[in-house]
Image 1 (cartoon, one colour):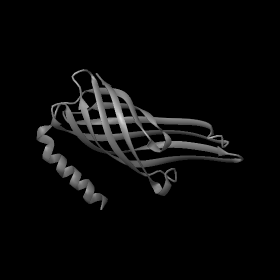
Image 2 (spheres, rainbow, N blue to C red):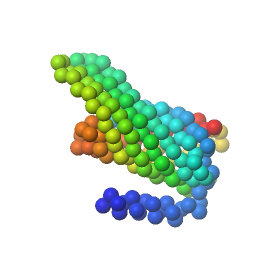
Image 3 (spheres, rainbow, N blue to C red):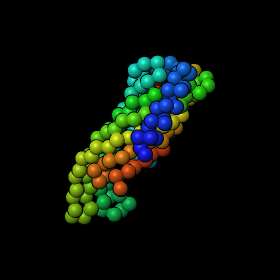
Length: 167
């Protein structure tokens, strides 16, 4: 089923490649979402061609005595996605991507200490607006699969708002 969905996304993407718009060579900013507790991420996009780019997102958290429970946790996660970008109209684009990432987390709860690293596969689909000034704003959905126990049932997803400076 996953292969069928991915194939449909790629075929739709091929249908829209004739409407591709030049994308910024570099964009740096924030991706603000729930992201399984990571919240905001530092985000960098690197244009690879006229309608393809690489996105790297780094998220981390450090919570001490979370909700006065004596629960401490620390985590860091790096996601990398290859994205296809298609123009809708003017500065509006939509995009889809695939990739994955790595992370590490630890927590202490009373006398219990736990450390783990994890890897995950990710997809991405979203919409963005490229302003005449060097500002790119986006809204996307990112499902993540894997996580070696970090995610409940090895699945996590996130909806996020992105604000990036283009250069």
